[in-house]
Structure formats: structure tokens, C-alpha cells
Length: 188
Length: 333
Image (cartoon, rainbow over all chains, first blue to last red; front, side, top):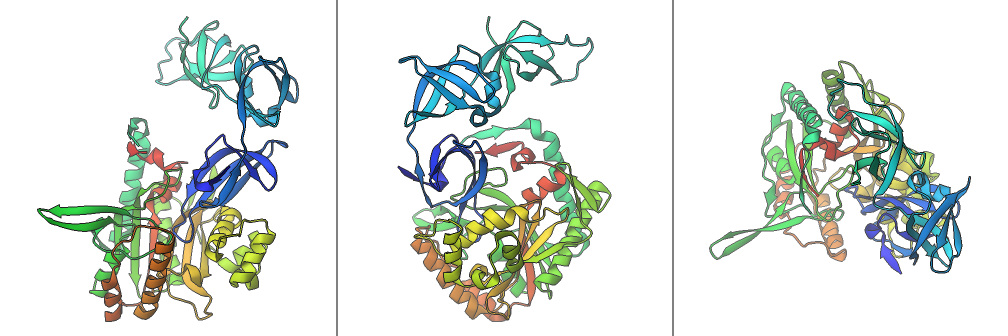
């Protein structure tokens, strides 16, 4: 299938100069002279390298059909995150370079969707939110009343995030994994 | 689309208001007349690169198509021909068929100012004076800090379009100004050329390879002498292949666009016909053409230069923001 570059969306997979890329960022751009353009940041699924590329907004881009399969996240090693398809127990390796920082919020045993093309895993679709336990955070100093003040907290996956001062060690909190931002306390 | 309230931007919004006051002060101190202009018009200047917003005025049985103005130029030049001298407009303009992004919105604030009796290169000195005035007002200095980078407004870096294509894209001027050679060069650089013309490819290579380098050396940059295909309302140069147009960049961001204004009504009429034709081909809204604009030029427009500046983009630099949304407390997207 082909789409106009002006309609490209973040997360889509495209074929560009014979290789598969995932769209990381798009910015429509109309210089006020000549044609409208679409600025993108695209990531090569084989090398994990990102590229800034400007398409003509009405240029046709080949999209790559992918299926998203629900898989269980098992563990990660120094180069890959390992997932298991729960239907057939096949294991898939997704390069950490491809997943990016968001992997630090993945909890072993959780299920999430993996994009697969020709039986090759391309990337993970990060969950909209993750619920994780705070393993350590300092107790807030009394009298600290600055609005919106934050402190650092370490989570069970080892990731560090900024949380409001009232959060204590042992609490479970919700994080937006794409931004690493605190989104609230989990109902316990 | 929805209406969004962002009171968390209040401090930046206030800084932006002060910034606009400073812009206004610069022009009032230098005896420019402030123009209060309509934002709708029954006719427009045809521009093939811009889509417009169409609306309708109704009274009883009568109807009149009106268009939100993508630029106040058609009004300002009428006033100049009629005898107004140095002048400026600071207000809204509208461009349709565009997505909202970090530096872009379909509704935006434009600063246009005109100086009588100067060409585009002399005019760039006035642009520098404006930047220096703003730097002094906000930073008490010729140097400002934007996103942890220092920008010095002691002078403008100047580069021709031909030199910039040679330096950043490896395209020499023989190839740059020859449409056939340029398309061949673009194809050899693996750009998709099939079904696209010179203007399409030129815009793409400019955005991909040239623009990211402009205004990046700690000074604002003007890039000048654009190919005649991008002349728009600018005077042609004597070389026959370029136009007296410059664009202003700070930190890779396009801030403004200046012309030595075209005063020859015959050339302008030809360009209008061409632009209108291209609008038709690309399926854009067929608005009423401002043919009276040509009659005004025929009466005789004094030689002058003018610039259009995206004031929110310039505001980003002086208020140290990364996204124009940060300057707003209420927005639609």
C-alpha cells in the first residue's frame, strides 16, 4: 500500500530506498514558496539508526504491512528484549536500539504487542501506561511546599522517574512509558 | 479540533506580549505608521504554494464570497501606492491545508513592514536594527541565549542561495538554475523525481539539505537571490535567473521573507496568470483574483522593500521557547 507523505503517522512502517523504517516523528511544513513538505524522523528497523528526511507532502510512500501480535515480555540481554508469542510459544528478539528508552518501563511477564513483518519482529508497541512499584524514594523534607515540586523515585524495573513529593517507597504508580512522566497513583 | 486552555503558559504568554510591545515600539520610534487592516477580503493575490480559507457574507438574498487573508500585502501595497510611507502591520493571517506543528499553525501572527526607497540588501540592515533593539530590550545586550546557545546580533551572516546549495548540498550553480540538470542531479541523489517538477524538488532539497544549516553559527543568517521561479512579488535581478528575495533564519528556523518589491505591473500580471494556472492544476480553491492590485501597480508604486515575519517564531527565539504553543494560553488544534 502507498500513502501520501503528508498523511504519514508516527509509528507507521514504511519502505524507503529498499529498507524498512518506522516513523518516529512527523512535522508538516509549508515554506510559503513551492511545495508543502513533510519533515520526518525515521528509524531503520535493521540498524536502529535514525534519519531526518523531508518528503514532498504529495509524494507516495510505500507502507509496510505489519501484524501486531500479543506477546509476553520475558527478559532483556545486552542487545535484545526477548518476547514470547503465547499462542505458539515462539520467541522473538527485538533489538533494544529499536525499542529505545521505553524498554526501561517493561516489567518481565507483562504482555504487550509486537509488530511483526515476514515473521521478523520490528518493534514493540509500547503500552499507553504502565503500573510499577516504587522500590526507593527519599522521604520528602517537611516544609517543602513548592507547588509542582518533584523528587526522584526508582521503580521495580530499575527505571528512575520524577514523582510528586507525597509518593512513598512501596507505593504503586502509573507512568506514561513514552514520556517517562508520572501519571498518578494506582488504585490498590 | 478542540479548544484548549493552557494557563500553565501564562508566564511565557506575558513575555510574548511584552515582546510584541517591543516590536511595536521599534517601529513607532522609527516613524513607521501602524496599519489596522481587515483579515477578510473579497479578492486575493494568487499564490500557488498557499491554500486559503473561504467564507461568505450574507445580507438578505445577496451573497459575497470572502477569504481570510494569507498575508496583508494586497492591502498594504494599495496604501503605499496611494501615498502611505514606511509602515507596518502586526496581526493575524490564515493559511489553510496546513497541519499544526511546533513552528506552524493555520492561524498565525504576522509582522509585515515596508520601507520606501531601499532595496532588499539595504533593508536587511533595518531587520538587523530590529533584532538589535529586541535583544537590547530583553537581554540588555547584543547577545541573547536561546535553548542554551548564544546568538550575537552584531551583524547578519549573508549567503547566496547558489553558495548555500554548493556548500550544503553539493549542487553547483550550473545545475541549480537549469531545470533539467537540477532534476537529474536530484535523481542521482535518490530523490523521487518521477511526476515532480523543478519547484517540488528544489523545495525538498532546500528543506532537507540547506535549511537545517542556516542561522546555526551563532548569528542570524540571510539567504538571498532565490531562483526566479520563487520570485513571487520580488524584483528580478539583472542576471535573469534570480530574484531580489531573502529569507531570515535563526537557529535553522525560517523567521521571515523579504522582497525588493516588484513595481513592474506587466511582470506581476504574468506571474499572477502563472500562479493562478498552477492553483487550478493543483486543485486549490478558486478565489477571486485581485486584478485591481495590478491597476494599483500600474499607477506607479515607489521602489520599496518589505518583509513578512512570523512573529510567533521570532517570539520563540526571544522568549526562549521550543514550540509556538508555549506562547498561547488558549489554542485550537
